[in-house]
Length: 79
Image (cartoon, rainbow, N blue to C red):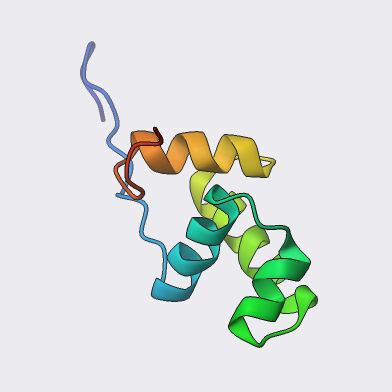
């Protein structure tokens, strides 16, 4: 049982190498189709990875994912 003032700590977010790769391309402004073409995978596979990323980061869209991943230090700061 938690005492007053004690906060729960959530486990650190860990994205796979492929998820980070896809998120990096999205940061650069590529669409899901463009990422798919660059990685020689289907758009459906890219969207599958994006859904997993959203779930892990507890966000609903690309912009929120980019902001949260950057805050968590998963991606370099955007300039």
